[in-house]
Length: 139
Picture 1: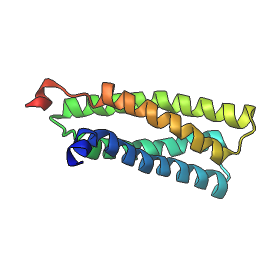
Picture 2: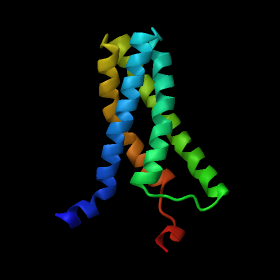
Picture 3: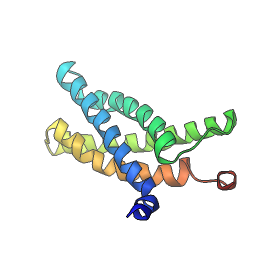
Picture 4: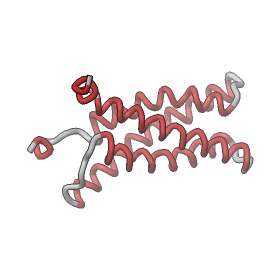
């Protein structure tokens, strides 16, 4: 059983951190919309910023276990992480507009549904483009 966990540890940790990131995203979105009467599109962007900062730290430290080798590689990693997440913000915002404006779904329900898609998109992008293993990592 342990070796099974070890084999899928990265995926399991990504899912755990993805759930935590999703909670940060949804709770902050809800607070901005309900408590501060922010427009759902603006709240989507602001809650995205909170979630991306949380995700970067947790993905780097707990999921992909990357250590900054030098400032240049850290900046490359950080810029590629935010670039990939900007793409997912586009998907997030586009689906939110579709679900809320076109399909008249409740904003919070739409946000929850959209996050299922975002978690998958972000995992694939993070694994293959941001925290990809280099030859140096194998040493």
